Length: 62
Image 1: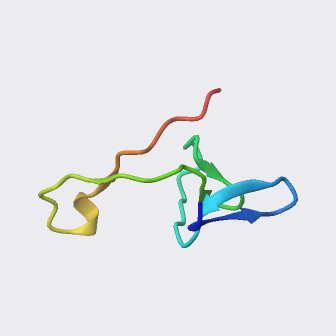
Image 2: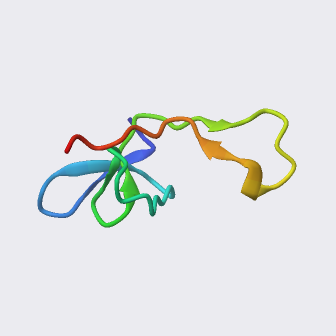
């Protein structure tokens, strides 16, 4: 996929230009990069960034 790139020695891939600070998200890896194939942000009627949510969020297994 063109918008993904390798990072670090562990070979993980992340979405170029997408940063994630949510440490307990399954897709957060490689120094706070998002490793999901794609992301979904909503809701549709948000008026500010504070009203948005990452619908791709998935908790890490404990």
